[in-house]
Length: 189
Image (spheres, rainbow, N blue to C red):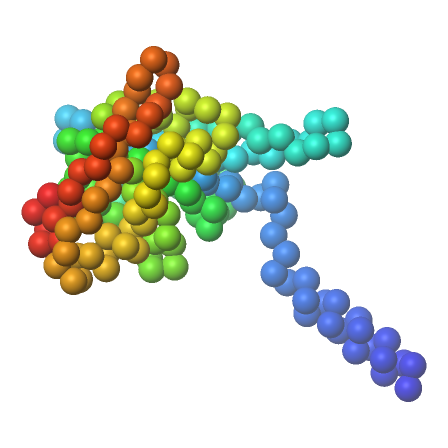
């Protein structure tokens, strides 16, 4: 009887460990900045790099950028640059330059439904610089007062309703909430 119990426990240990992911093998992406300039898309990923220091975990960041003629190619360009597996389950925000609202419609086709619960934020400043204003990856979340996720935008589009997306801007060397911009549910942003 003990042999059977040990065999079952051993099998459970073997079966249960196949979902293990080593944190050193994944790039945890917390924020993404997107801008269209000169018919090219500039995409910047912010990776959280946890480090142990004095018995605490601190967060450092790495940034990866890609410039390509299509948004999909720019995302794939970053995928080629990062040697780790890209992990988007902790994605907080996608920050889009204020004159590039058409990017929202392109995001709907690139990001699958499992990964559409991140905030969409518009920036009057360079979105890649907005990523670097703080050493807290939730900094953007702290300055906007209304979460507008891609999921909510998709729903508003299906219902042909307008939705207000928060806009941030730079003021006195920091980012602040600026206003809302109305994104039309009928695809006329």
